[in-house]
Structure formats: structure tokens, C-alpha cells
Length: 188
Image 1 (cartoon, rainbow, N blue to C red):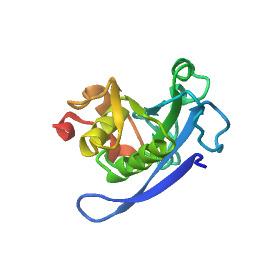
Image 2: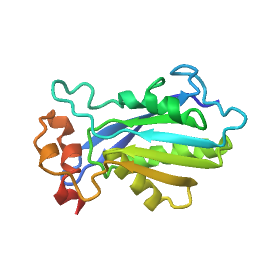
Image 3: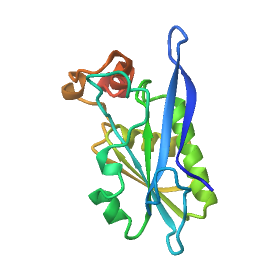
């Protein structure tokens, strides 16, 4: 049985080698059985939807930068989860934001999630990525075209890079590499 789990992987930054742990978490939010409940595929549901978070600015404390924290729209009971749950099983994927978006660990961990869902028998796997989550979804299908993802929906994804608004957000120093990776210069 599969339940929510966290994965920690070393990401080697460019320049002087400084490993950063990038933690991810995937939780089944519909049908909701509890945070640590095993993943289940009810009869009749052949599609899994994975909600992928975007930028979560951490302006006051470094403590949450290093941990995956789901956005409110990814939680059980949110309007989008309730709507999607009528015809799909819904999973929320979150990741720490202490390394650049190009970190291989997030894509590898997402590959593990997709593989497990395929093993559970889902015939369709849909990514819904908001903001930076849309970039992660796109990168995943580009890097793993045969993984079994059948659709990617990007919501406000900065494919050409983010503008001045994101660049001026005050974040903790530990989150700056992630924020810089969303810039127009980095995405070019």
C-alpha cells in the first residue's frame, strides 16, 4: 500500500559544490482517507489528477523553505479538489523551494509518483501545474515522454520567465535560487 511519503535527494548546485536537500511529498486528497492513509484506487476511477504547486514565497522564516507545503487549493475540501473528485482521484504534489527549478530531484520524485500510480492501474494521469508547477509538469513530460502522463494543464506558468513582479518579492536567502530560476533570463 502506498501512503504519503517524503523523498529527500541531494541537488548539486552549479559553482562550488553545495548539496541542498530537496524534499517532496505526494498525498492523495480525493478520496481523502487521511494524510498518512495508503493510496487507493476506487473501482470506476481510471484517471489520476496530480496538482503541482507553484511558488510559495517565504518572507519571514527560512524554516518552511526546506519542506514541501501544499497550497490551499491542493487541500482536501478545496473547490478544485471537490470538483475534480467527482470523476477523478486527486493527488497533491509539493516540493521544497530551496534549489533552482532545474533540480533533477523534483522530476525524479514526480517520476516515482507516476510509476506508482501506473502500478495502481490508472490508465490516465493528468498534471495540473500552477505557476512554477506548470514548468515542472512541462519539463517532466519533455524528459519522460513515455511515462504515461496523458495531459498537462498549465495555469499561469511562466514559460518565458517571470516579470518584474516576482523578481521584487522579498524572500529568504535560502529561497533565492528557486526564485532566480523563474526569471526571464533563466528561462531563456
